[in-house]
Image (cartoon, rainbow, N blue to C red; front, top):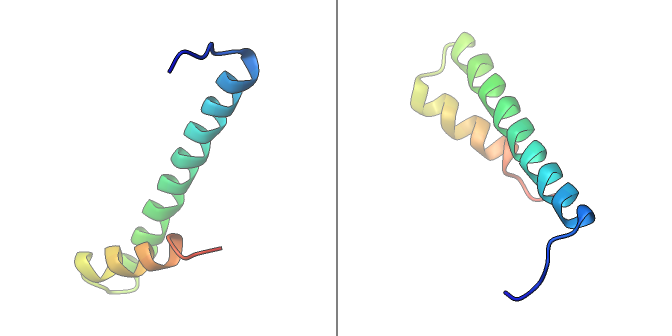
Amino acid sequence: MGKTLNVVSLMGMIMVVGIVAKNGILMLDAVEEHLAAGDTLRQALLRSGRRRFRPC
């Protein structure tokens, strides 16, 4: 894009990667909770997805 990357933009990219990883970990934790409660895998994935991907 013709722009140089500086320290601030690289730190921003690292932070975004961290937020995405944290969201994935929390979503997997929610799936495990639903599976322990007796849901099927499909139900657990759908319920945890709705909970983690809700608008702010």
